[in-house]
Amino acid sequence: MSAVRGEFSSRFGFIMAAAGSAVGLGNIWGFPTQTASNGGAAFLVAYLVLAFFLAYPALMAELMIGRHGQANAVSSLQKISNKPWQKHFAFAVGFGGILCAGFILSFYAIVAGWMLSATAEPIATLVGANTASTWLSEQSLTRNIIFTMIFIVLTVAIISRGVENGIEKWSKRLMPALLGILFALIAYVMTQDGAMEGLKAYLVPDFSSIFDAKLLVSALGQAFFSLSLGTSVMIIYGSYISKKENLVSLGAYVTLIDVFIAFVAGLLIIPAMYVAQAQGVEIFSATTGKLLSEDTLVFQVLPALFDGMGEVGLFVGFSFFALMSIAALTSSISMLEAPVSYTVERFGMKRVQATWLIGALIAIVSITIVCNLSSLFGLVITLTTKVAQPLLGLMCCIFVGWIWYRGSLLKAIQEGNPEVHNTLFWKIWPWYTKFVCPLAIGMVFLHSLLS
Ligand code: TRP
Image (cartoon, rainbow, N blue to C red; front, side):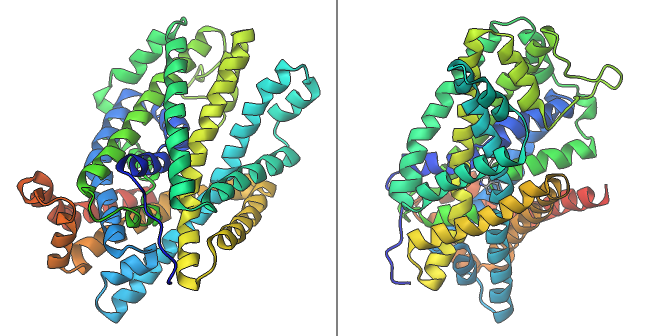
């Protein structure tokens, strides 16, 4: 326990790292697909409301616990627990979150591996390696295993370098690159036929469906996944923030960036779908009007669109999948940090060893999933993101609202933010996290179980 803890060296560094964790396949793939299959703009409106009114307060709960505890998730939660049962409860929630982060990484690495192979494919085509390019674009066990492993090794390589030289440095490089590619692609898609129709479907809401229960459940799940909540990741990132920083505004920036990027990704993907449709690619079922292939949207519709562009398509395709891979990498490093920081602090293991060890365990789980894709892939996603994440996020709100001594909590809010008692946050957030968040998250969760 005597090892010096890492810390983010700057506000910008923290924002890039936390936003890097938040912005991932969930934003660029998950959000637009969900939007397209849940009635377009209505989903967007529900998502925006839930992200700001439920996910942001829950994010603040996790960041606050971590910054106060200055330690991994288990120790941080135990620090605000007072009775023995609370300490056990803290262990269950903290450790549960760490496990959840590990399992999320194990399926995330598979999807990210698909993104990596799709990035390599245009290069193979360009140099005329046609067999390689076909192999890269077709689902196969070998391809999936190889690219999943490459992705895990990349993640391990960054995390083994620690907070400042690993997480922070790479997030600061990768996040701006991601934004640049995203905007360049949007500019291109907007010039194509069909783009405007897509824009309309995305931005003009059909309010009749907005209170649809399924839509609300999906939107909340999406918001939680996107802010990486309930998995102890944000507790750990919070613990690397100096007590001199204004946490309330940092959390707000991260939420804003996350929502903004999801929104912008929608501006790319949804018009791109309509452009592909205008070029004769089938997207919506002719009979039901539903999206044909939610899962394969990114791997079928978009490549079809890129193919239609001719030579430029190779570059656009390459940029797009490079973008996806980068977004996945800045997210996956946060998932790996959860178990690694716990192992380092709890068992005094060296960071490099802990990282490779846990990376290897996760690789084993990933490969097991890859070999049983049809039975395990969906199951692990449902259990981690639909069950564990909302439940654990709810528990974090309960810790803040019901277990943490109020005096100590209020002091933690004031840290780095002496003027906070003049703000709305001070007046509302403590009771909001105590009553509204647990109730609302609980209701949505129950509903998703029943339906
Ligand atoms: N938020 C990321 C995304 O949108 C995924 C993610 C990163 C995540 N870290 C996490 C999800 C931790 C759950 C837990 O893709």
